[in-house]
Length: 184
Image (cartoon, helix red, strand yellow):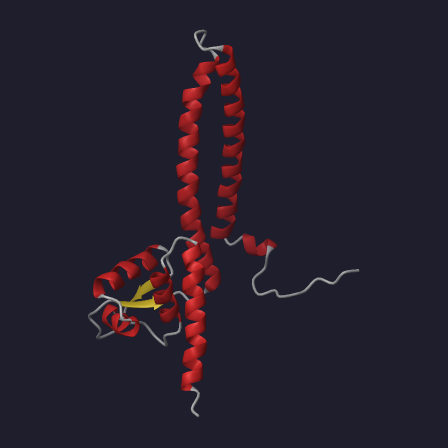
């Protein structure tokens, strides 16, 4: 017994878990499988090699790689004498987490703040408009309070994202610490 089958089974289990986990965050399972497969590679692969490895079409493979590049989960690498593009999985899971979530969070934060600020600019004039019914003004005040509170939350979330990008988060939650707290 040379262990090759056991290694393959163990890797496949992790690749399957990665693909299912990424699906929870809006990334297709096939893209998750590609990342998982690349993670276990000894070196970078071309699109053709990935296609052969996963049995996906070249178009699907190209789209998946582009998605992983945008999420910074894989990078293009250069190798002397190789004319085709080579791709390598980001092996630092801390960095992968930071890149993935900050990209997603920034997009969501921006979309929501923009909508809330636009709504605030439309609602605030209602308070001083004499033609607006008193119950509408009251509802507008409540909405302004809710939107102001939500914008404060997004300001906090932006600062949290900043702490990930600057790696300041690791001052509060250090990498690699696996200590269990003891109850007194």
